[in-house]
Length: 215
Image (tube, rainbow, N blue to C red):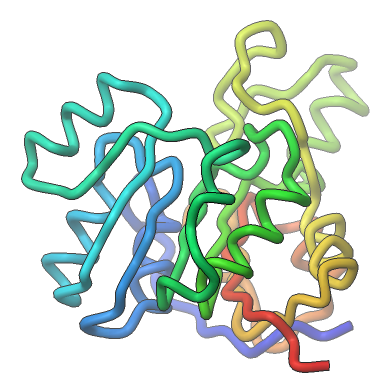
């Protein structure tokens, strides 16, 4: 399989480099729901850059308070249990950034994203990244990297996946990949129609723009 075309900008990007990619995917004025939005940094970026009508859900109350303090419309909620309360297609874009691997049931959560939004944007660390493989193969220990900064005993990540795993999950849910970007360890975008296995080895993280297939 060959993924959609991507470009190659400079290699130095902000710490949450997926935010810039996500912002590229969201058009001005869109109605957006950011699930697991933390303190609202991405929502604030989207509102300032694109004037979106943004809403957020966050599990940690301290983060909710911080986001509300910034003037953002964020409520406390759990991605695993509260998405069923939203009606079909009520948002233009539903975002799950660096969170799907921390949910109890990623398949169900992704299905809800595709139901709630006309488009779903998902970013996640790639456990198939070559540095992860090397740490396990040569070091014999669970990796601690910039994209996976936690030790095995205190990580919030309970469902590690690779880019290949995520693409297969999209197939199972009949989700169409509209656009996708893989990022290397320095934040540079990998691509120009490279095959998926190259992304799976050299991508430290990935961002996917999805929609429900008509098929």
